[in-house]
Image (cartoon, rainbow, N blue to C red):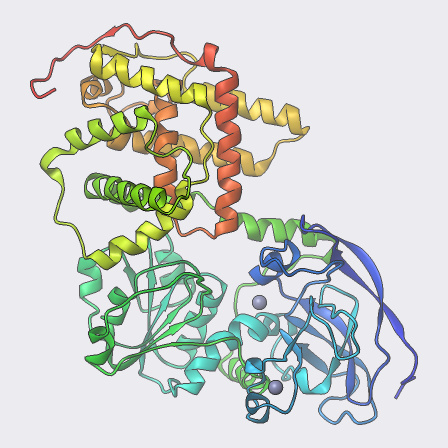
Length: 588
Ligand SMILES: [Zn+2]
Ligand SMILES: [Zn+2]
Protein backbone atom coordinates (compact mmCIF):
# COMPACT_ATOMS: atom_id res chain seq x y z
CA UNK A 1 0.00 0.00 0.00
CA UNK A 2 1.34 3.44 -0.88
CA UNK A 3 4.83 4.18 -2.04
CA UNK A 4 7.20 2.13 0.07
CA UNK A 5 10.34 3.82 -1.12
CA UNK A 6 9.45 7.50 -0.93
CA UNK A 7 10.32 9.56 2.11
CA UNK A 8 7.81 11.98 3.53
CA UNK A 9 8.01 14.97 5.78
CA UNK A 10 6.34 15.65 9.09
CA UNK A 11 5.83 18.89 10.92
CA UNK A 12 6.42 18.65 14.61
CA UNK A 13 6.94 20.91 17.58
CA UNK A 14 10.58 20.74 18.53
CA UNK A 15 12.69 21.99 21.40
CA UNK A 16 15.84 23.65 20.04
CA UNK A 17 17.77 24.08 23.27
CA UNK A 18 17.43 23.54 27.03
CA UNK A 19 14.92 26.39 27.38
CA UNK A 20 12.53 23.68 26.26
CA UNK A 21 10.46 26.10 24.19
CA UNK A 22 8.89 24.21 21.31
CA UNK A 23 8.55 25.65 17.83
CA UNK A 24 7.40 24.20 14.51
CA UNK A 25 9.98 22.01 12.85
CA UNK A 26 9.78 20.11 9.61
CA UNK A 27 11.76 16.93 9.17
CA UNK A 28 11.90 13.83 7.02
CA UNK A 29 10.27 10.60 8.11
CA UNK A 30 12.00 7.40 7.12
CA UNK A 31 10.75 5.57 4.07
CA UNK A 32 8.09 3.11 5.10
CA UNK A 33 9.84 -0.21 5.74
CA UNK A 34 8.20 -3.62 5.33
CA UNK A 35 7.03 -3.68 8.95
CA UNK A 36 6.45 0.03 9.38
CA UNK A 37 3.18 1.73 10.19
CA UNK A 38 2.65 5.37 9.25
CA UNK A 39 0.49 7.08 11.85
CA UNK A 40 -1.33 10.38 11.47
CA UNK A 41 -1.26 11.74 15.01
CA UNK A 42 -4.65 12.56 16.53
CA UNK A 43 -3.72 13.00 20.19
CA UNK A 44 -0.54 13.00 22.18
CA UNK A 45 -0.37 13.08 25.97
CA UNK A 46 1.99 15.35 27.88
CA UNK A 47 3.93 13.97 30.79
CA UNK A 48 6.72 15.11 33.11
CA UNK A 49 9.25 13.13 31.16
CA UNK A 50 8.64 15.47 28.24
CA UNK A 51 9.71 18.43 30.37
CA UNK A 52 12.78 16.65 31.70
CA UNK A 53 13.83 15.74 28.18
CA UNK A 54 13.15 19.05 26.44
CA UNK A 55 14.91 20.97 29.21
CA UNK A 56 17.86 18.62 29.37
CA UNK A 57 17.32 17.84 33.03
CA UNK A 58 18.92 14.46 32.52
CA UNK A 59 21.88 15.91 30.67
CA UNK A 60 21.44 13.74 27.59
CA UNK A 61 19.17 15.78 25.36
CA UNK A 62 19.83 16.22 21.66
CA UNK A 63 18.24 19.02 19.68
CA UNK A 64 16.12 19.63 17.77
CA UNK A 65 13.87 17.29 19.73
CA UNK A 66 10.21 16.56 19.08
CA UNK A 67 8.85 15.11 22.35
CA UNK A 68 5.65 13.13 22.96
CA UNK A 69 5.38 9.47 23.92
CA UNK A 70 1.66 8.92 24.48
CA UNK A 71 0.65 8.95 20.86
CA UNK A 72 -2.75 8.04 19.47
CA UNK A 73 -3.39 8.27 15.75
CA UNK A 74 -4.85 6.82 12.62
CA UNK A 75 -2.98 4.40 10.40
CA UNK A 76 -2.52 6.02 6.99
CA UNK A 77 -0.07 3.58 5.43
CA UNK A 78 1.50 0.22 6.22
CA UNK A 79 4.49 -1.73 4.90
CA UNK A 80 3.91 -4.97 2.97
CA UNK A 81 4.68 -7.24 5.94
CA UNK A 82 2.45 -5.49 8.42
CA UNK A 83 -0.25 -7.80 9.72
CA UNK A 84 -1.04 -6.29 13.11
CA UNK A 85 -2.99 -3.22 12.00
CA UNK A 86 -4.69 -1.90 8.90
CA UNK A 87 -5.06 1.49 7.26
CA UNK A 88 -7.84 3.47 8.90
CA UNK A 89 -7.51 1.85 12.31
CA UNK A 90 -6.85 3.82 15.47
CA UNK A 91 -3.56 2.89 17.07
CA UNK A 92 -1.24 3.97 19.83
CA UNK A 93 2.52 4.22 20.32
CA UNK A 94 4.25 4.71 23.65
CA UNK A 95 7.70 5.21 25.11
CA UNK A 96 9.54 2.56 23.11
CA UNK A 97 9.81 2.13 19.34
CA UNK A 98 12.59 -0.43 19.04
CA UNK A 99 14.53 -3.21 20.80
CA UNK A 100 17.21 -5.78 19.95
CA UNK A 101 14.76 -8.70 19.65
CA UNK A 102 17.49 -11.14 20.68
CA UNK A 103 18.11 -10.72 24.39
CA UNK A 104 16.31 -12.50 27.21
CA UNK A 105 13.84 -9.71 27.92
CA UNK A 106 13.07 -9.28 24.21
CA UNK A 107 12.46 -13.01 23.80
CA UNK A 108 10.17 -12.94 26.82
CA UNK A 109 8.24 -10.00 25.40
CA UNK A 110 9.28 -7.64 28.14
CA UNK A 111 11.15 -5.37 25.76
CA UNK A 112 10.96 -2.48 28.24
CA UNK A 113 13.86 -4.23 29.98
CA UNK A 114 15.96 -4.66 26.83
CA UNK A 115 19.27 -2.85 27.19
CA UNK A 116 19.10 -1.78 23.57
CA UNK A 117 15.56 -0.46 23.56
CA UNK A 118 14.99 2.63 21.46
CA UNK A 119 13.03 5.54 22.92
CA UNK A 120 10.33 7.15 20.85
CA UNK A 121 12.29 10.41 20.89
CA UNK A 122 15.70 11.76 21.82
CA UNK A 123 17.22 8.48 20.72
CA UNK A 124 18.83 7.05 17.60
CA UNK A 125 16.89 4.65 15.40
CA UNK A 126 18.42 1.62 13.67
CA UNK A 127 19.06 3.76 10.58
CA UNK A 128 21.18 6.14 12.65
CA UNK A 129 18.66 8.96 12.48
CA UNK A 130 17.22 10.67 15.56
CA UNK A 131 13.82 9.46 16.70
CA UNK A 132 11.07 12.06 16.89
CA UNK A 133 8.00 11.81 19.11
CA UNK A 134 4.30 12.45 18.89
CA UNK A 135 3.98 16.24 19.04
CA UNK A 136 3.89 16.06 15.29
CA UNK A 137 1.66 15.55 12.28
CA UNK A 138 2.78 11.97 11.82
CA UNK A 139 5.14 9.22 12.94
CA UNK A 140 6.52 6.03 11.45
CA UNK A 141 6.62 3.14 13.92
CA UNK A 142 7.52 -0.53 13.58
CA UNK A 143 4.38 -2.64 13.96
CA UNK A 144 5.80 -4.45 16.97
CA UNK A 145 5.53 -1.21 18.94
CA UNK A 146 2.11 -0.20 17.70
CA UNK A 147 -0.97 -1.16 19.67
CA UNK A 148 -4.54 -1.20 18.45
CA UNK A 149 -6.88 1.09 20.35
CA UNK A 150 -9.92 -1.11 20.97
CA UNK A 151 -13.19 0.10 19.51
CA UNK A 152 -15.24 1.60 22.32
CA UNK A 153 -12.28 3.26 24.01
CA UNK A 154 -12.11 6.98 23.24
CA UNK A 155 -8.76 7.70 21.58
CA UNK A 156 -8.02 10.65 23.85
CA UNK A 157 -8.66 8.39 26.86
CA UNK A 158 -6.16 5.90 25.52
CA UNK A 159 -3.24 8.35 25.44
CA UNK A 160 -2.37 8.39 29.17
CA UNK A 161 -2.78 4.62 29.36
CA UNK A 162 0.21 4.25 27.04
CA UNK A 163 2.50 5.63 29.74
CA UNK A 164 1.07 6.12 33.25
CA UNK A 165 -1.60 3.47 32.76
CA UNK A 166 0.65 0.62 31.74
CA UNK A 167 3.20 1.70 34.35
CA UNK A 168 0.83 0.80 37.18
CA UNK A 169 -0.85 -2.07 35.39
CA UNK A 170 2.39 -3.92 34.63
CA UNK A 171 3.53 -4.72 38.20
CA UNK A 172 0.01 -5.56 39.36
CA UNK A 173 -0.22 -8.03 36.52
CA UNK A 174 3.26 -9.44 36.97
CA UNK A 175 2.90 -9.92 40.73
CA UNK A 176 -0.55 -11.42 40.36
CA UNK A 177 -2.23 -8.57 42.16
CA UNK A 178 -5.28 -8.25 39.96
CA UNK A 179 -7.91 -10.24 41.88
CA UNK A 180 -10.86 -8.35 43.34
CA UNK A 181 -10.84 -7.81 47.08
CA UNK A 182 -7.13 -7.10 47.44
CA UNK A 183 -6.08 -4.14 49.54
CA UNK A 184 -3.64 -1.75 47.98
CA UNK A 185 -2.26 1.71 48.54
CA UNK A 186 -1.00 4.40 46.24
CA UNK A 187 1.73 6.56 47.69
CA UNK A 188 1.82 9.96 45.99
CA UNK A 189 -0.90 11.35 43.78
CA UNK A 190 0.82 12.55 40.61
CA UNK A 191 0.07 11.29 37.10
CA UNK A 192 0.97 7.67 37.82
CA UNK A 193 -0.71 7.82 41.22
CA UNK A 194 -3.96 9.04 39.69
CA UNK A 195 -3.96 6.24 37.22
CA UNK A 196 -3.03 3.80 39.96
CA UNK A 197 -6.14 4.63 41.98
CA UNK A 198 -8.34 4.34 38.91
CA UNK A 199 -6.95 1.03 37.74
CA UNK A 200 -6.80 -0.56 41.19
CA UNK A 201 -10.39 0.50 41.84
CA UNK A 202 -11.42 -0.95 38.50
CA UNK A 203 -9.82 -4.24 39.56
CA UNK A 204 -12.09 -4.22 42.59
CA UNK A 205 -9.40 -3.44 45.16
CA UNK A 206 -9.80 -1.55 48.39
CA UNK A 207 -7.59 1.45 47.63
CA UNK A 208 -5.91 3.74 50.14
CA UNK A 209 -4.17 6.91 49.04
CA UNK A 210 -1.22 7.94 51.20
CA UNK A 211 -0.06 11.52 50.92
CA UNK A 212 2.16 13.91 52.85
CA UNK A 213 -0.72 16.25 53.64
CA UNK A 214 -4.48 16.44 53.73
CA UNK A 215 -4.54 18.58 50.63
CA UNK A 216 -5.47 15.84 48.18
CA UNK A 217 -8.01 14.06 50.35
CA UNK A 218 -11.05 15.39 48.52
CA UNK A 219 -9.56 14.69 45.13
CA UNK A 220 -8.59 11.15 46.15
CA UNK A 221 -11.86 10.22 47.80
CA UNK A 222 -14.44 12.12 45.75
CA UNK A 223 -12.90 12.49 42.31
CA UNK A 224 -10.91 9.28 42.08
CA UNK A 225 -13.06 7.10 44.33
CA UNK A 226 -10.39 5.92 46.76
CA UNK A 227 -11.67 4.04 49.81
CA UNK A 228 -9.35 5.54 52.39
CA UNK A 229 -6.84 8.34 52.80
CA UNK A 230 -3.84 8.46 55.09
CA UNK A 231 -1.59 11.39 55.91
CA UNK A 232 1.86 9.87 56.16
CA UNK A 233 3.05 12.20 58.91
CA UNK A 234 0.12 11.29 61.14
CA UNK A 235 1.45 8.37 63.12
CA UNK A 236 -1.90 7.57 64.71
CA UNK A 237 -3.58 7.38 61.31
CA UNK A 238 -0.79 5.28 59.89
CA UNK A 239 -1.03 2.92 62.86
CA UNK A 240 -4.62 2.09 61.94
CA UNK A 241 -3.38 0.55 58.70
CA UNK A 242 -0.56 -1.66 60.05
CA UNK A 243 -0.29 -5.11 58.43
CA UNK A 244 -3.28 -4.43 56.23
CA UNK A 245 -2.05 -4.04 52.65
CA UNK A 246 -1.26 -6.51 49.88
CA UNK A 247 0.75 -3.92 47.99
CA UNK A 248 1.83 -0.31 47.93
CA UNK A 249 2.60 1.47 44.69
CA UNK A 250 5.19 4.06 45.66
CA UNK A 251 5.33 6.86 43.08
CA UNK A 252 7.25 9.42 45.15
CA UNK A 253 10.28 10.62 43.16
CA UNK A 254 12.19 11.95 46.18
CA UNK A 255 14.06 10.45 49.07
CA UNK A 256 11.67 9.22 51.76
CA UNK A 257 11.66 6.62 54.53
CA UNK A 258 10.54 3.10 53.63
CA UNK A 259 9.92 1.62 57.04
CA UNK A 260 6.59 3.35 57.76
CA UNK A 261 5.25 1.85 54.55
CA UNK A 262 6.77 -1.59 54.94
CA UNK A 263 4.97 -1.71 58.27
CA UNK A 264 1.64 -1.33 56.49
CA UNK A 265 2.17 -4.43 54.37
CA UNK A 266 0.66 -7.80 55.20
CA UNK A 267 2.71 -10.98 55.11
CA UNK A 268 3.94 -11.32 51.49
CA UNK A 269 3.04 -7.71 50.85
CA UNK A 270 4.92 -5.83 48.15
CA UNK A 271 6.30 -2.33 48.07
CA UNK A 272 6.57 -1.43 44.40
CA UNK A 273 8.89 1.50 43.71
CA UNK A 274 8.25 3.72 40.68
CA UNK A 275 9.83 7.06 41.43
CA UNK A 276 13.37 7.65 40.25
CA UNK A 277 15.44 8.39 43.35
CA UNK A 278 19.17 8.71 42.84
CA UNK A 279 20.12 8.58 46.47
CA UNK A 280 20.57 5.50 48.63
CA UNK A 281 17.49 4.52 50.62
CA UNK A 282 17.46 2.71 53.92
CA UNK A 283 15.53 0.12 55.84
CA UNK A 284 16.33 -2.50 58.45
CA UNK A 285 16.01 -6.07 57.25
CA UNK A 286 13.55 -7.35 59.89
CA UNK A 287 11.04 -5.02 58.25
CA UNK A 288 10.98 -7.37 55.26
CA UNK A 289 12.10 -10.63 56.88
CA UNK A 290 9.26 -10.70 59.37
CA UNK A 291 6.48 -11.26 56.87
CA UNK A 292 8.49 -12.26 53.80
CA UNK A 293 7.75 -8.85 52.40
CA UNK A 294 9.21 -7.55 49.18
CA UNK A 295 10.60 -4.26 47.96
CA UNK A 296 10.63 -4.24 44.19
CA UNK A 297 10.68 -1.87 41.25
CA UNK A 298 8.91 -1.68 37.95
CA UNK A 299 9.36 0.35 34.80
CA UNK A 300 6.63 1.24 32.28
CA UNK A 301 5.28 -1.95 30.70
CA UNK A 302 5.50 -4.24 27.71
CA UNK A 303 3.58 -3.94 24.47
CA UNK A 304 1.53 -6.99 25.50
CA UNK A 305 0.66 -5.34 28.79
CA UNK A 306 -0.18 -2.12 27.00
CA UNK A 307 -2.69 -3.99 24.86
CA UNK A 308 -4.08 -5.60 27.98
CA UNK A 309 -4.49 -2.37 29.90
CA UNK A 310 -6.28 -0.77 26.95
CA UNK A 311 -8.67 -3.70 26.77
CA UNK A 312 -9.10 -3.69 30.54
CA UNK A 313 -9.95 0.01 30.66
CA UNK A 314 -12.39 -0.34 27.81
CA UNK A 315 -14.12 -3.25 29.54
CA UNK A 316 -14.33 -1.38 32.83
CA UNK A 317 -15.34 1.89 31.21
CA UNK A 318 -12.44 3.56 32.99
CA UNK A 319 -11.93 7.20 32.14
CA UNK A 320 -9.63 9.86 33.47
CA UNK A 321 -10.04 13.61 33.53
CA UNK A 322 -8.32 15.00 30.50
CA UNK A 323 -7.67 18.53 29.42
CA UNK A 324 -7.22 18.97 25.71
CA UNK A 325 -5.06 21.67 24.23
CA UNK A 326 -4.27 22.46 20.62
CA UNK A 327 -0.75 21.71 19.50
CA UNK A 328 0.01 25.41 19.08
CA UNK A 329 -0.67 25.87 22.81
CA UNK A 330 1.80 23.19 23.75
CA UNK A 331 4.30 25.59 25.32
CA UNK A 332 1.68 27.02 27.68
CA UNK A 333 0.55 23.53 28.60
CA UNK A 334 4.08 22.37 29.36
CA UNK A 335 4.72 25.46 31.41
CA UNK A 336 1.57 24.87 33.40
CA UNK A 337 2.48 21.27 34.04
CA UNK A 338 5.91 22.31 35.22
CA UNK A 339 4.57 25.08 37.40
CA UNK A 340 2.42 22.59 39.22
CA UNK A 341 5.63 20.97 40.37
CA UNK A 342 6.65 24.15 42.10
CA UNK A 343 3.37 24.69 43.88
CA UNK A 344 3.93 26.55 47.10
CA UNK A 345 0.64 25.36 48.47
CA UNK A 346 2.26 22.00 48.84
CA UNK A 347 4.42 23.20 51.67
CA UNK A 348 2.08 25.79 53.12
CA UNK A 349 -0.14 23.18 54.67
CA UNK A 350 -0.91 23.76 58.29
CA UNK A 351 0.37 20.37 59.36
CA UNK A 352 3.67 21.02 57.70
CA UNK A 353 4.03 24.23 59.60
CA UNK A 354 3.46 22.28 62.77
CA UNK A 355 6.17 19.91 61.74
CA UNK A 356 8.58 22.80 61.43
CA UNK A 357 8.07 23.97 64.95
CA UNK A 358 9.16 22.51 68.25
CA UNK A 359 10.92 19.25 67.82
CA UNK A 360 11.75 19.74 64.22
CA UNK A 361 13.38 23.08 64.62
CA UNK A 362 15.63 21.48 67.17
CA UNK A 363 16.23 18.50 64.96
CA UNK A 364 17.11 20.72 62.04
CA UNK A 365 19.62 22.53 64.18
CA UNK A 366 21.22 19.23 65.05
CA UNK A 367 21.32 18.20 61.44
CA UNK A 368 22.77 21.48 60.43
CA UNK A 369 25.51 21.08 62.96
CA UNK A 370 26.21 17.53 61.86
CA UNK A 371 26.23 18.38 58.20
CA UNK A 372 28.49 21.35 58.77
CA UNK A 373 30.94 19.22 60.66
CA UNK A 374 30.83 16.57 58.02
CA UNK A 375 31.19 18.90 55.12
CA UNK A 376 34.04 20.83 56.64
CA UNK A 377 35.79 17.54 57.25
CA UNK A 378 35.32 16.51 53.66
CA UNK A 379 36.38 19.93 52.47
CA UNK A 380 33.06 20.88 50.94
CA UNK A 381 32.05 24.45 51.40
CA UNK A 382 28.54 25.34 52.33
CA UNK A 383 27.56 28.92 51.73
CA UNK A 384 25.40 30.74 54.17
CA UNK A 385 25.74 28.20 56.92
CA UNK A 386 26.61 28.58 60.43
CA UNK A 387 30.14 29.91 60.24
CA UNK A 388 28.83 33.46 60.24
CA UNK A 389 28.65 34.82 63.74
CA UNK A 390 25.06 35.76 63.20
CA UNK A 391 23.87 32.31 62.45
CA UNK A 392 25.62 31.00 65.47
CA UNK A 393 23.86 33.58 67.57
CA UNK A 394 20.50 32.75 66.09
CA UNK A 395 21.17 29.15 66.90
CA UNK A 396 21.94 29.92 70.48
CA UNK A 397 18.83 31.98 70.93
CA UNK A 398 16.66 29.38 69.30
CA UNK A 399 17.98 26.62 71.50
CA UNK A 400 17.33 28.65 74.56
CA UNK A 401 13.82 29.51 73.49
CA UNK A 402 12.94 25.97 72.73
CA UNK A 403 14.44 24.87 75.99
CA UNK A 404 12.74 21.81 77.37
CA UNK A 405 9.96 21.56 74.86
CA UNK A 406 11.58 19.02 72.59
CA UNK A 407 10.14 15.54 72.41
CA UNK A 408 12.11 12.36 72.16
CA UNK A 409 14.01 12.16 68.97
CA UNK A 410 13.32 9.59 66.37
CA UNK A 411 15.44 6.74 65.08
CA UNK A 412 18.83 7.43 63.69
CA UNK A 413 17.99 6.26 60.20
CA UNK A 414 15.35 8.91 59.72
CA UNK A 415 17.78 11.54 60.81
CA UNK A 416 20.44 10.49 58.41
CA UNK A 417 18.08 10.41 55.53
CA UNK A 418 17.03 13.98 56.11
CA UNK A 419 20.59 14.99 56.67
CA UNK A 420 21.51 14.07 53.14
CA UNK A 421 18.75 16.22 51.80
CA UNK A 422 19.52 19.14 54.04
CA UNK A 423 23.14 19.02 53.19
CA UNK A 424 22.50 19.10 49.49
CA UNK A 425 19.95 21.82 49.66
CA UNK A 426 21.34 24.15 52.27
CA UNK A 427 24.14 25.07 49.95
CA UNK A 428 22.13 27.00 47.45
CA UNK A 429 20.59 30.24 48.74
CA UNK A 430 22.87 33.23 48.18
CA UNK A 431 22.94 35.59 51.14
CA UNK A 432 24.51 39.00 50.39
CA UNK A 433 27.10 40.07 52.96
CA UNK A 434 25.51 43.37 53.94
CA UNK A 435 22.30 41.52 54.72
CA UNK A 436 24.20 39.19 56.99
CA UNK A 437 25.49 42.24 58.79
CA UNK A 438 21.90 43.43 59.02
CA UNK A 439 20.96 40.18 60.74
CA UNK A 440 23.75 40.54 63.26
CA UNK A 441 22.58 44.06 64.11
CA UNK A 442 19.05 42.77 64.35
CA UNK A 443 20.11 40.12 66.82
CA UNK A 444 22.11 42.60 68.85
CA UNK A 445 19.35 45.20 69.09
CA UNK A 446 16.77 42.73 70.31
CA UNK A 447 18.66 40.28 72.46
CA UNK A 448 21.58 42.36 73.73
CA UNK A 449 20.23 45.90 73.90
CA UNK A 450 16.63 45.00 74.70
CA UNK A 451 15.26 47.12 71.84
CA UNK A 452 12.36 46.24 69.59
CA UNK A 453 11.35 47.16 66.08
CA UNK A 454 8.64 49.77 66.46
CA UNK A 455 5.41 48.53 64.93
CA UNK A 456 3.68 48.95 62.57
CA UNK A 457 6.48 49.20 60.05
CA UNK A 458 6.48 51.15 56.82
CA UNK A 459 7.11 49.76 54.31
CA UNK A 460 5.56 46.59 55.67
CA UNK A 461 6.14 43.12 54.23
CA UNK A 462 3.19 43.47 51.85
CA UNK A 463 4.56 46.77 50.55
CA UNK A 464 7.98 45.26 49.98
CA UNK A 465 6.59 42.28 48.10
CA UNK A 466 4.53 44.64 45.96
CA UNK A 467 7.58 46.78 45.23
CA UNK A 468 9.51 43.72 44.17
CA UNK A 469 6.73 42.63 41.83
CA UNK A 470 6.68 46.11 40.27
CA UNK A 471 10.44 46.03 39.92
CA UNK A 472 10.41 42.60 38.23
CA UNK A 473 7.52 43.53 36.00
CA UNK A 474 9.35 46.63 34.84
CA UNK A 475 12.59 44.74 34.35
CA UNK A 476 11.07 41.78 32.51
CA UNK A 477 8.52 43.84 30.61
CA UNK A 478 5.76 41.55 31.82
CA UNK A 479 4.16 40.16 34.93
CA UNK A 480 5.85 36.84 35.49
CA UNK A 481 3.15 34.64 36.93
CA UNK A 482 5.66 32.40 38.63
CA UNK A 483 7.16 35.39 40.47
CA UNK A 484 3.73 36.54 41.63
CA UNK A 485 3.08 33.04 42.88
CA UNK A 486 6.32 32.90 44.80
CA UNK A 487 5.60 36.26 46.41
CA UNK A 488 2.19 35.04 47.43
CA UNK A 489 3.88 32.02 48.92
CA UNK A 490 6.42 34.15 50.77
CA UNK A 491 3.65 36.22 52.28
CA UNK A 492 1.71 33.18 53.49
CA UNK A 493 4.87 31.67 54.76
CA UNK A 494 5.86 34.79 56.61
CA UNK A 495 2.46 35.01 58.29
CA UNK A 496 2.54 31.41 59.38
CA UNK A 497 6.18 31.22 60.36
CA UNK A 498 6.53 34.51 62.22
CA UNK A 499 5.18 33.46 65.60
CA UNK A 500 6.29 29.87 65.21
CA UNK A 501 9.94 30.46 64.46
CA UNK A 502 10.98 33.99 63.54
CA UNK A 503 10.47 35.92 66.76
CA UNK A 504 12.93 36.22 69.58
CA UNK A 505 11.33 35.50 72.90
CA UNK A 506 11.50 39.15 73.86
CA UNK A 507 9.34 40.04 70.89
CA UNK A 508 6.42 37.76 71.63
CA UNK A 509 4.50 40.08 73.90
CA UNK A 510 4.75 42.79 71.26
CA UNK A 511 3.40 40.36 68.68
CA UNK A 512 0.32 39.65 70.76
CA UNK A 513 -0.31 43.35 71.26
CA UNK A 514 0.26 44.41 67.66
CA UNK A 515 -1.13 41.47 65.73
CA UNK A 516 -3.52 39.52 67.92
CA UNK A 517 -5.77 37.29 65.85
CA UNK A 518 -7.21 39.97 63.66
CA UNK A 519 -4.63 41.23 61.23
CA UNK A 520 -2.07 39.64 58.99
CA UNK A 521 1.49 40.02 60.35
CA UNK A 522 2.67 40.98 56.88
CA UNK A 523 0.78 44.27 57.22
CA UNK A 524 2.47 45.05 60.56
CA UNK A 525 6.04 43.79 60.33
CA UNK A 526 8.69 44.91 57.88
CA UNK A 527 11.99 43.99 56.28
CA UNK A 528 13.72 43.18 59.58
CA UNK A 529 11.51 40.19 60.24
CA UNK A 530 11.10 39.22 56.61
CA UNK A 531 14.86 38.83 56.37
CA UNK A 532 14.81 36.33 59.22
CA UNK A 533 12.48 34.15 57.17
CA UNK A 534 15.24 33.82 54.59
CA UNK A 535 17.58 32.43 57.22
CA UNK A 536 15.07 29.65 57.80
CA UNK A 537 14.07 29.01 54.21
CA UNK A 538 16.92 26.68 53.21
CA UNK A 539 16.11 24.42 56.14
CA UNK A 540 12.43 24.50 55.36
CA UNK A 541 13.06 23.75 51.72
CA UNK A 542 15.08 20.71 52.72
CA UNK A 543 11.81 19.21 53.93
CA UNK A 544 9.93 19.82 50.72
CA UNK A 545 9.42 17.04 48.25
CA UNK A 546 10.36 19.12 45.27
CA UNK A 547 12.35 17.90 42.37
CA UNK A 548 15.89 19.16 42.37
CA UNK A 549 15.52 21.31 39.26
CA UNK A 550 12.35 22.94 40.48
CA UNK A 551 14.01 23.63 43.78
CA UNK A 552 17.07 25.11 42.13
CA UNK A 553 14.86 27.43 40.14
CA UNK A 554 12.93 28.48 43.19
CA UNK A 555 16.09 29.19 45.11
CA UNK A 556 17.45 31.25 42.28
CA UNK A 557 14.30 33.38 42.42
CA UNK A 558 14.61 33.73 46.17
CA UNK A 559 18.22 34.82 45.79
CA UNK A 560 17.10 37.47 43.33
CA UNK A 561 14.63 38.73 45.90
CA UNK A 562 17.42 38.94 48.47
CA UNK A 563 19.47 41.03 46.08
CA UNK A 564 16.50 43.35 45.76
CA UNK A 565 16.33 43.68 49.55
CA UNK A 566 20.01 44.47 49.59
CA UNK A 567 19.65 47.13 46.90
CA UNK A 568 16.99 48.84 48.98
CA UNK A 569 18.56 48.12 52.32
CA UNK A 570 18.76 51.74 53.44
CA UNK A 571 15.08 52.45 52.79
CA UNK A 572 13.58 49.10 53.81
CA UNK A 573 15.44 48.50 57.06
CA UNK A 574 15.59 50.53 60.26
CA UNK A 575 19.11 51.64 61.11
CA UNK A 576 18.31 51.56 64.79
CA UNK A 577 15.57 50.00 66.90
CA UNK A 578 13.92 52.13 69.53
CA UNK A 579 10.74 50.36 70.47
CA UNK A 580 10.82 49.71 74.19
CA UNK A 581 10.83 46.18 75.38
CA UNK A 582 7.57 46.23 77.27
CA UNK A 583 8.19 43.07 79.20
CA UNK A 584 11.35 41.94 80.85
CA UNK A 585 11.49 38.23 81.06
CA UNK A 586 13.17 36.57 83.93
CA UNK A 587 14.94 33.81 82.08
CA UNK A 588 16.52 36.01 79.46
ZN1 LIG B 1 5.07 9.53 30.23
ZN1 LIG C 1 16.61 -6.88 23.67
